[in-house]
Structure formats: C-alpha cells, structure tokens
Image 1 (cartoon, rainbow, N blue to C red):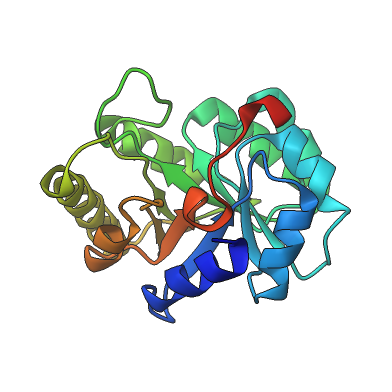
Image 2 (cartoon, rainbow, N blue to C red):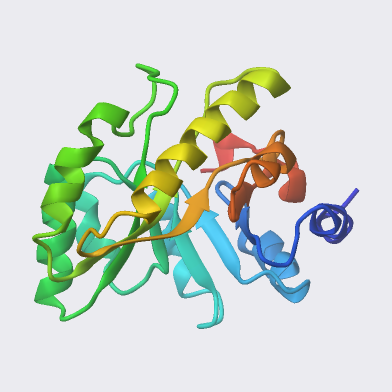
Length: 221
C-alpha cells in the first residue's frame, strides 16, 4: 500500500475541521511531494536540521510544523520558516523564541507541550507548571500561544481516552480565561494509532506519520 492509498484511507476518518499534519521525519523529499500532490499542505518534522534540509525543496505554500523537542540553540534556524511550533515547554525556550522573533520583526505561533502522562522519558511541561509559563507568555511581544500539544503514554483505548480528556479539560479551562497572548485555537493530539480517539475527544490537529508514509528507517536520518 502506497502513500496515496494510505492518505485516502486516513482522510476518510478525519473531519474537515481537523487539520492533518503529515509527519515526514526520516522520509525522503519524494515521499513528501507525493503527499503534497494529494493535497497535503501541513507537514511535521521532529528535528530542526531535517526540517531545514527539506524546507527549500518544497513549495512556499507548505506549512511546516516543528513537532519535536526544540533546543534553545536551534531556535534561530527556524525563525520565519515554521507555521507552528508545537513544543514550547519551558520559560527558557519561550524567552529565546521571543528574542529571536523580535529581532526579525516576526511573530511566532506556538503550542505548549504538556507532559500529561508525567513521563520522565519525555519532555513537555507538567500541568502544575503551566500557569507560570503562561504568566511569562503574557509579557511577550512576539510570541502567540495558539493552543496545546500532547504526546500521551502508550496504552489501550481507555487509557488513551483518559489522557485525551484530561488535555481537553485543560484546553477548555484556558479557553475561557482572558490571558494576554494566549488563544486556545488548536489542540494537537493523536498519532497514527490513536488519532480517531483523539478526534472524538476534541483534537483539531492530528499528527500522522507511519499511517501515511509507512514505517520509518532511522538509519536514513
């Protein structure tokens, strides 16, 4: 089964109001172009270096999403090149994004990455530290928080639903608060094996990689 077939099957399960981000990490530019020909415009990359290597190879209407952990020293490379940063997870990173985008006279749209499963193996901010980060966001001139992102723990359908519901509750709570520079527009959660449950629980961005492009070969990175 090829990319075109896979995309048709995935699209059948995703409502029009939900954005499908095709996660193209480790995949060659030819695969990305095939997805582009099938109407995909949102592509997600985990690593800054890989995103940069593909950026100039694609049309200007592609919306690049940085979905992996963003190191502070890599922010300078993506200014003006990404549609949405999914992985804001610290005040230190926030300040670097603010500085770099201000220097270029640009605005950064970001999602706050919440470590909803409290997994030590993952980055992301813990729920109890969210308020302090949001307080700092209000002081920014060049960063707009557009929502939340989560990578939930591996589990069964019930476990997945539990974490997605927790994220939706946080999202809804913040949506009704008047916080400067914060607009809860996007809830990015759900990947190849659980995106249907994520959508049912309120996700409006899903990140699908293997379900579109097939298994990844990390030796090709």
